[in-house]
Image (cartoon, rainbow, N blue to C red; front, side, top):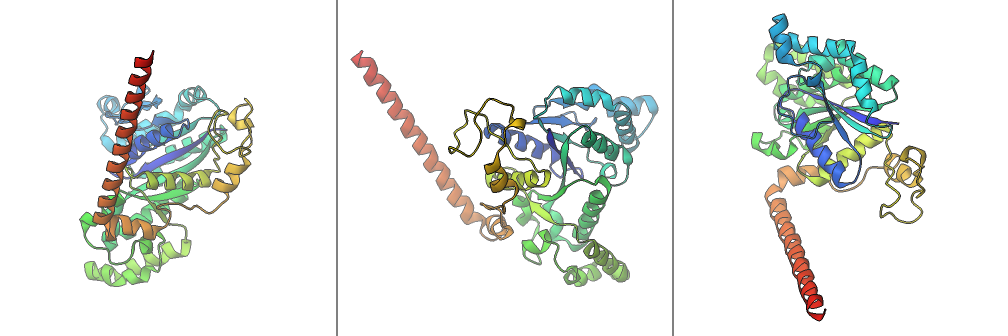
Length: 346
């Protein structure tokens, strides 16, 4: 059964960077992964692309041929992809039944909040056997401004209701959040979407005319009670691993390592059947069903790392990297000495 992620978010939220980082992480973990570019305007793709929608249609060609603007042309491209879904389905079938696929969507937010083409494509993918989760990226600097934070909450809620998928909202670029000023509250207030009435003063001071409207919007978000956020610093290994566990839990994906993997004895079946036919009870109960634990799994640790004590953590990590580099150099030198000594003996 193939699994995957529908990566959406506003322009500049870090979708392509996240896909590239996820590809690097899975490659290091020896997990199969394929990235599908569904943005017909994306000319500079940073990641290895298994399927590129520009082979079917490009935004530039649509704008020239039909005289449309960027937004209208993008909607046309998505409608064209929906009408030619068999083109995408044939190429996805070539990736195999055990594929893990990232679908990198365009940055136009109306595609994941209002327009039906992406929603219909997602439904067709689920009917074809994909177990998908929506990963909605939002720039973390929005939490430093109350009106922007409320707008991000509304956007995330609308995307959740529209796509109808297991949904993981992510505050990306959390490692840069300190550059935009101090937070009015601790980071967990924003990730857990706690009592929004505490934002009343900040909202009323910026737009006093719309005080009643602001309170009504906050009440609407709290009534649904659906929105929450994970954090992401794409260059931080622990942050990427934590988000990987969250998404695996949302999709129900339990990775089955290959038979020759160095795993504790008895944790998985080592016969040569395909991974989809080899049960992994150990992975099920330690990953999918258990509480997610580990570095950066608690938002208070994230705040300490990137907000409260960033300089101290940077200094500690640099010292660790230097120590690791010295260890690697010493091991390489010892290996050269052994090779020389064995060569002299022979």
